[in-house]
Length: 90
Image 1 (cartoon, rainbow, N blue to C red):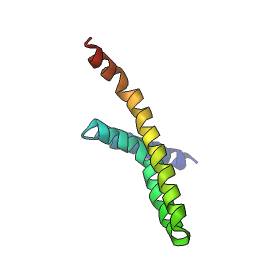
Image 2: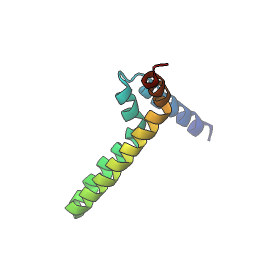
Image 3: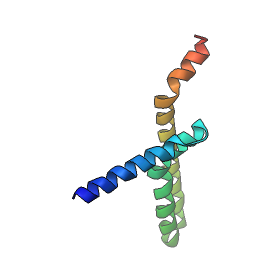
């Protein structure tokens, strides 16, 4: 059990490092959301393509909508306050 916790902790640190070294703010948002939406979308859509092309389209639409919501959430947490203060001219 201890090795599983260590592996999980190391993977979280690697993921946070992956986010931290993003060269631009949009890349940061993409890196936050990709593991939850883009990576599973590719896997599920390729499997659905075998059985039903219309299912692939629905999967892509659902995951793209979720990815957009995730990016909006991340922007709100990371950049919204700075943006609001720069717009107000403070």
